[in-house]
Image (cartoon, rainbow, N blue to C red):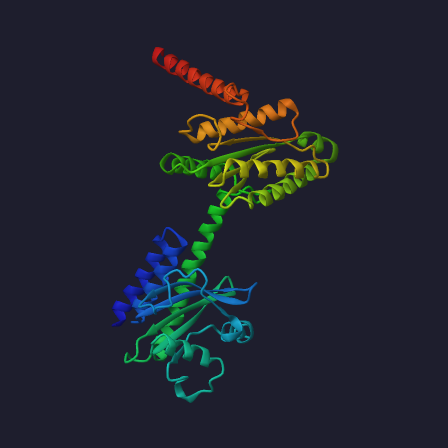
Length: 384
């Protein structure tokens, strides 16, 4: 590929990463773009997961071997098998060197160099039918992040020093795109996360609940909502100070998260103030009620707490037709209101009081009042 074509390919790689709408799209754009620039037939992007000490492959792009998936869920390699990632970046680079790419071939290290760590790369090239590769360390914010790997098929020209230099430049371009992705992911996380408890916030609950009710309407999936109001928070704030009140909120957030973990795919959230919820899609109403009962029990065991008022609404119970997220939320909220009014230590469950369930009746009365209020506003608007 000529210099002009390579330059255009580098620019296109950067643009594709910037335009990506998901992490997967970003990883694919990086790998495919790097493969084009370096005239490879395969490329991979891997991240160094420090806690388990492994390289995790994020994407395999191009001509994949039979055992390779585009987005592998569990393709990992222990970093001790590839010490150049850690040793180079933490010893030589810190000592004043610069991260740079290097080339390896299925025949062994070029120039007759000692094998050392290279035998792992060589074995992988042979096992997957590739002729050579160039590996470039990725550095983000001054820390080793992972690696960019591009390979060519047997019989293709072996990567040379100029290719390695170009791969080093590509690694910097890819690292800039990954840094942008991390900033966007952090912004998304902050937009949908309660800063005090680390749980989801109301914005994310509203989004997920709309999606859940749509699944219920289309597939019949059971959708359940548990709403909890933490009792006595004002008393705690007034008596012990807001720092203790915040601590109580955090501790109940942990209780809620632990309970939600018993329901596959459930979302634990703080709606605001002293109000929390768990959104569940799939598990039965009985399973959700059992979790709600556990939440109530554990809430009473918290220091300074007075338990919670807890309401449950599930499409698995006799609550009538649920065609909107708003109705399910209204039912759960009405059940929580009933629990608080009765001073109940246990959940109140909508639809379990017979044909004249006060919870369902209250929710329907609120809905009727809202409709009437809306109609009055429309009439006033027309008169004006």
